[in-house]
Image 1 (cartoon, rainbow, N blue to C red):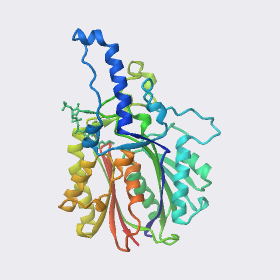
Image 2: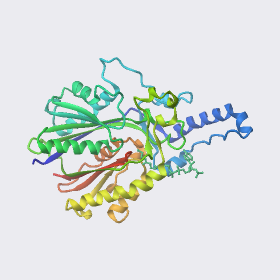
Image 3: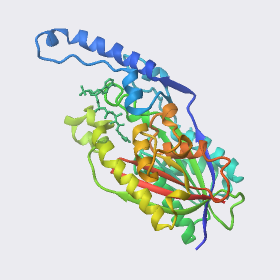
Length: 372
Ligand code: COA
């Protein structure tokens, strides 16, 4: 079986950013207006006043300072508090397709490829803007790649699951080069009126090119191994779906957007991620002391510090577990790939690292990479 090489990554970052202070100011304007509107019920003890949000809490609890978004104006309008992303004509590229095409071209540049070199496109992300036709087939059309394309969703772990699928296809000979893209518009499923989670997500799109070693034009990174794990949990859940209209009683309810029990996620997922990385390295014959990078999913700084401490058996140095969530927040499946994209340059041949994502499902995916 052929070796699989990661030859290029690409990134699309939306042009607007929102700081914690901007987000909190808007949230608190809305809270004060709500409390004023409900003044009588609050005075009568029938309602609790809504508590305000606070930038210091957000940074301390999550490590997030800002996030890039597809539409700043709509999110920061206290009367609206959600992005405004107008519908497009069916003949125009959809928003996710446009993000994917930009990130893909960036990755093609690094891999020294053009679109017609690609045999397959996988769009792997948490939310597709429609059920069909697959966004991936649209990306294939607007890029001009040949072969096949399909969508897949494993929430925050979509990229690593996509990388395993792509690697297996290349190893088995069903494709020589695959583009895997992660157009994440997380602000579309975020409840900006929920104090516990309104700060969590941002938008971005990443792209990765995997190739068979015999056709790769750049040195890149050898995929030493991929591993997937899932175990059912309701602690991160979104009940939006095509059957919502068949259950009118639930339309517009909170559970049709992202909801989580953050504390439980933290406690249950961290040990499992550390276990997976450690066992995956061990089974691949790679001592932890040989690993110079953990490109982890970017949801919470303390989570990543805990996981890297468990893996290394000591505190990780900042360059060993790069952080991008301070600037990007949680961009779901794109997060670990952004960390790799921004923090893998200049590493010498033989350097090893693990790209690892985790999230709803629960799901964990790890990809061991070695610089060629
Ligand atoms: N501003 C001020 N206070 C806030 C607040 C806000 N925006 N949001 C919550 N609080 C309060 C809570 O009400 C609670 O108050 P209490 O102690 O009086 O009850 C307190 O702060 C602690 O809240 P808690 O939700 O327990 O905080 P936390 O330390 O668990 O941090 C997360 C919350 C979400 C940042 C954290 O749990 C997390 O990131 N978990 C991992 C989630 C994850 O990885 N998810 C994957 C998604 S794909």
